[in-house]
Every structure is written in C-alpha cells, then in structure tokens.
Image 1 (tube, helix red, strand yellow):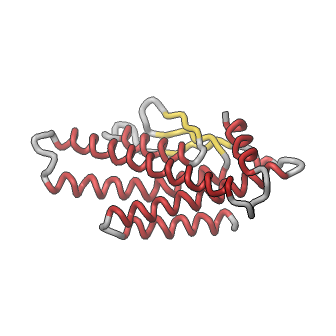
Image 2 (tube, one colour):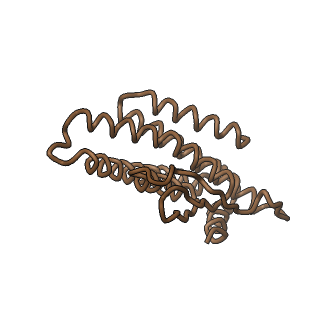
Length: 195
C-alpha cells in the first residue's frame, strides 16, 4: 500500500472517530488507525532491512511541526498530545521552550502518520474538553485549570491507548508466520537507527 493510500485510510478512520459521540467507538476507530499506521511502518522497516542500498528517502528525517502561536495558553497540553502520539509511532521529539513547535525526528511515513493522528485527536480533545466544561462538572475548580487538567488527562489516555494498539500490532507482526522472517530484527534495527 502506498503512503498516500495508507494516510487516506487512517484519515477515514479518524473522521469516523471525530464523527461519533460515543467515546468507545472513537477509541475503537483511533486504535484501528494506530494499528494500521504501525502495520505500515513495520512493512516499511522490513523492506528497508532487505534493501541492498539506501536512498535518502529511506533515512530518518527531521521536520518542524507547528503547534500554535506564541502566547497561546494551554500549548503544553497540545505538545503533550503530539509527543505521546509520536512516541507510539516511533518518532522522537524535541519541544521548543515556548511549546509553539516540535522538532519531529523519524522516518517520513511515521511522521506523516503522527501528524495525521494529531490533527484529528487535537480536535477530539478540544471538543471533549469544551463539553466537559459546559457540563459544569469541573466546579469549583477554575475553568482554565479544569481545561488544562482535562486535556492533560485526555492526552495521557490517548497515549496509553495508542501505545497498546502499537504493541498489539507489533506482537501480531512478529508472530505472523506468513510474514518474512526477520520482522523483529528489522524493528530492532529501526529503533537503533532512531537513537
């Protein structure tokens, strides 16, 4: 599957997650998107391990991802969400001191998947946070504090779910007898190359 087709499938799953009011359905779609991203990443890692020579497109790269404008309150929660999504997709991050941008380091397809997941999940986080605040359940906690706490917890929960989906996809890939041998080695080589 090409990177564009994979990203289109991930985007379709994320649109379904955004379109539902049921948090369990949203989690299921999000997990499915993460499993798809991980499976694609594994396939590419195995292909890279079998390539005799490497092109620059097959090497890790760095991109700057803009999170928000300087002075915007709550950027730390957005950065946390991006970093946790990135971690689940084998992307390393360095965060600007003012949280306005992130340097993402990894393979291009992993950064693309991370960015696609982030673009959808940040919308879901803001929508869920707004609904929580509108319900008044946060009182007597001040609204700003409640928003930040909710978004930090949302990011932590999403990061945990994505890591679980990634681990499940990796377990399935390394146990699958139909896959070429060396999947575990290719994944280990990828980890070494990123550190």
